[in-house]
Length: 216
Image (cartoon, rainbow, N blue to C red; front, side, top):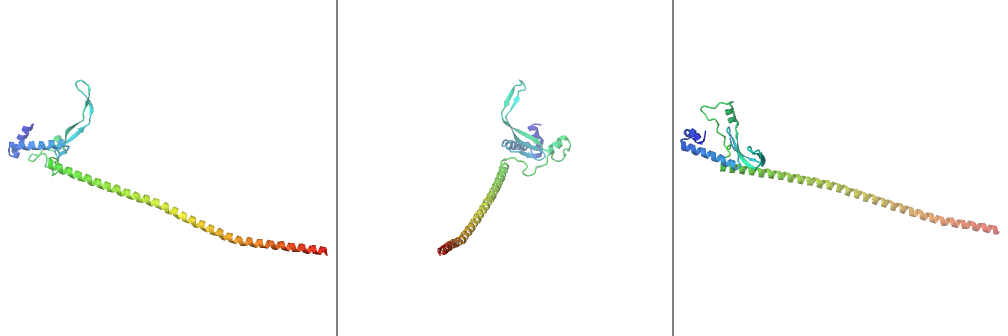
């Protein structure tokens, strides 16, 4: 079936050949424009049209067998829907008094400028919202990590300060104890010094008495 035959087939259903030709042209034009723009056109039960990028590669010329480099290119691709596959395979029968492909729900056909613009706007908004949430989470995580690090640093500093204060108090106590011991020791030494001259004077008196007794 070619395009003309397709138009003739649907002419009775859309009110004439002219209307059928315009309808076919409009549908095909919408699909082509959407796929060229990088959008995916999906019709429930029928299939989907999409653009596929093929990277540069090497191929062989079938006539000469020579190896040829093929440039990067983009090609259109059609994937049949499950309903279409089932009808072709025979697992489902074609309806007699109904359309073979059911009408798609609203928004399933991604063709046309308005629909594409709305879809792109929604995607961009969703991406921005996701990026903002991710940034907020990272900022919160950084703040929490910084607080924990500050708390860890402050704790050792406090411990070190407490140790220094304890060391100073201990040193002060030791110094006070030494001073008190020194004060107690000083009077004892003075008393010993006083006792020593007394012993010397007693020894002198005894020697003098002995000398007097010998002279007599």
